[in-house]
Image 1 (cartoon, rainbow, N blue to C red):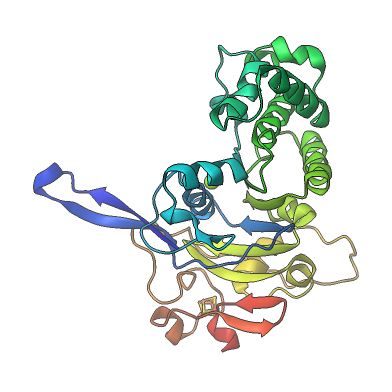
Image 2: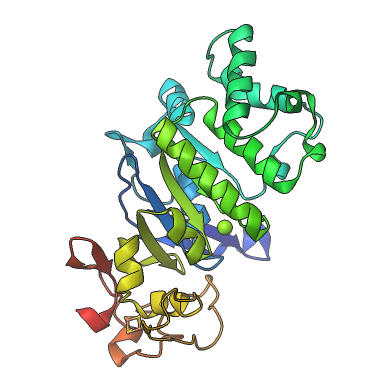
Length: 314
Ligand code: SF4
Ligand code: MG
């Protein structure tokens, strides 16, 4: 998948397109049915853009996204509508995506109307049912978004994503805006719901310890590229990419006897408008070699659970 955003010249039409932000640059991964795949990286690494492109909220520049043998990007009309029913999204800030003048019950009913699921009486039952599942009370049906706390709003966001009975839920920083104590409540709830509805999650977050808790596998992104991908246990036990090691350096180790190599990142995150040549991480990598400045590392399959893109291993 590639997603480039054109940057127009300050001269407008006369100047044409000046440059591109390569938000997602050649990212490829698989998502298995029933798993949680954690996509992690600093803000601006392209993880949200990946999620939005899969949701067709923005068009890809290049690539395919095969969902149940069909390319998401080629869907139109009925096919697209069906996919929009099966693939739902949960956002970081549910408040901004909730209509402030609509009662929660009506907001939750909306996807059922859009996708022509059931009649009015079914709708009320379905809404009540899903509200119970996410831990909201029956009288919340008549309340407005401003009457809820952040954690409750994320419960509403989850209920809205779930009501049309999706198969895949793309969660973009679903707990990042919440207090730490509430974060674990919502993550636990998401896990319960996943088991009950047999959902597949693409779980996007900047915090690798949040991602660890819920993911079966993790992909680490940096400046629009995938650096490393492994099962969660493997990634934490045996991180290979220097960037992953740097991310993990800030995560406390439960067992202090086990030592983990600490890596301090040099310098600032480069601008995605002018990403470094070769390995995009070379300007900050303590192990950078001459070839890292020219050659883009290709993905190397280390074992059946682990893939890394770094010249240290090829
Ligand atoms: Fe560092 Fe080179 Fe590996 Fe990039 S390819 S992470 S610069 S050693
Ligand atoms: Mg983001």
